[in-house]
Image 1 (cartoon, rainbow, N blue to C red):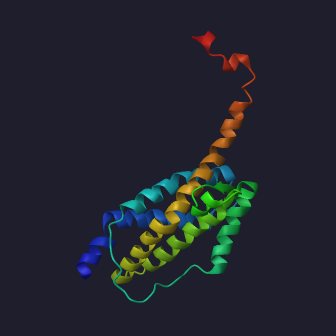
Image 2 (cartoon, rainbow, N blue to C red; image 1 turned 135 degrees about the horizontal axis):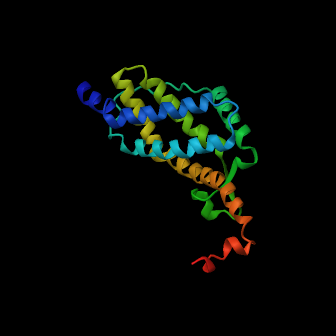
Length: 193
């Protein structure tokens, strides 16, 4: 059984997922005095990679009977969330369209960039903290729990917040293009051809 677990937890796909998860958590823990555009640029690159690597992790089953240790405290969560919120401010809230409750709601449902990114951070940080200890059975169970949470919870949050970050990243580009709309020399290209 231990050899089979080692094949899973030390597989190339698992190690690559761990690597990206560590990079994501480290980035959210260490960015200071960084412009919103730089953070958005970094996140729009790492989030799709994180999604891809999570989806490639081999299937496993839980072997332990005890629940896994939760390492991210409420203070840790609030610290990361407030750091992100301070960067995004008015851009932190976006409309959510992929909630089951949305089809029954008469009013828009909003979500938060900072909360979604921190929810992802929380699951990943809990996972990598246990994984780094190197106890094969615990590594397997942490991997299992993280991927099950990815399927049920934070994977959807990831794609939702990526949509919001995409909008933030490229809205300034679109606004720059809008200013040229009224200039006939720049909008009428028929005469150029």
